[in-house]
Image (cartoon, rainbow, N blue to C red):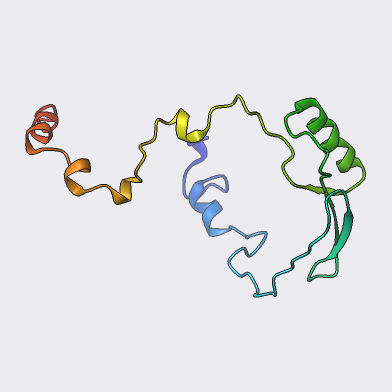
Length: 133
């Protein structure tokens, strides 16, 4: 609340910043060897992590239909209750427009367009700047 935001108040922003105790240090990520696993569709595999914990992965079978939304929800809930992590394409809506289509993106990435294409002409820039005078 703004009426407590005085330097002598223990509820002020300044007091809070001075007495801030981080819960975790997120700045250090130790270098570890990459963990890779290969297993067949439909199989379950247990992967030991660097800290000794185990992650159980299950790869979707080849007969799974990723366009069935209700089946995808059921699958995720079933695997959550079994404490497994599903891998593979879980859900895909073929009728959903792509990001490319929704944002009306150009064929050529902006970084590859020539300067005369992306740079406004002096006349159009003058017109825009006139509104700020």
